[in-house]
Length: 399
Image (cartoon, rainbow, N blue to C red):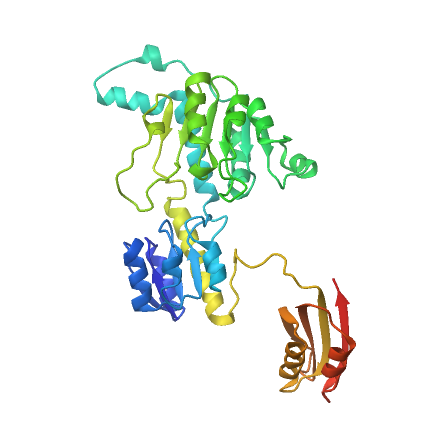
């Protein structure tokens, strides 16, 4: 199996792929048309990327079977196009949670003590203890979390270590889960904004979260509060944040920006980064040796499992629910030709198969096939399937 790595990747990960019997092509500088051309020329079965964008032309350029995002998010991959082309998309969730939480708290501490401004003045030959000796401190201040996935959950023990109570909102957070975590459940992102002294964002970018934090959200934040974003820049309405920084004296620690460069270096100009009270970093949240080694190991595991079993761990683009209306359950003697006979009968009835599995009983004498279909299963079809000598029984379960 040929694997094209089109981004920076840990050497241990390359070694792991080679050890798994893969033919590895490592070209970390590929992007745009060069990526399309490489896929067309090399014809890899698997593509591994980090920040490199993978648009539809790249996906359609060769016989790709799987794209692995060596990280948690996958918004840089055209997942809809991959689904249309029958290409699996997988990611490595949770492997960078600690690293991102560490940076988020680093930004919180830096804002409170104005560390970047201290450094800049010292380098300029300015001593200003009178100004920089002013700080509120973090103990007893409320941390608000928007999103409570792996990274959001890693923020909780760190907040408790600083003596900070936590209020959080997440679509999956229930009162019982909040009680178990020792935090307060908020009814909405705006409720978090109103209750917190510091808000930290940890949501994935998708159609529901794009631009979700706008004027209403920032309008609900306390004057002088901190806003931390280490998730994706596009979840924030940046003009609304800029307005709130001026109107409410918000301070912001941002590791991500809308329309930031995809590669490791490049020119990037954003009004946000020029504002007083904004500390920006270069989308480095997951960029620790510990995180990258864990992510590389997970990417290797995904490829190895796919190579040996055809199963894709962490796949993100399979249908959560198909149009299937019923399941045809066929108990049969485990002999060649029975499934072909069954599928032929279903096809002749004009019914579409959505999902299927065939499970063999101990001893390999008998098996049961479950075939989820879209369409009306009539008596004639059941009789046709039963017409094979090795079919034991046929039942239909309506959904």
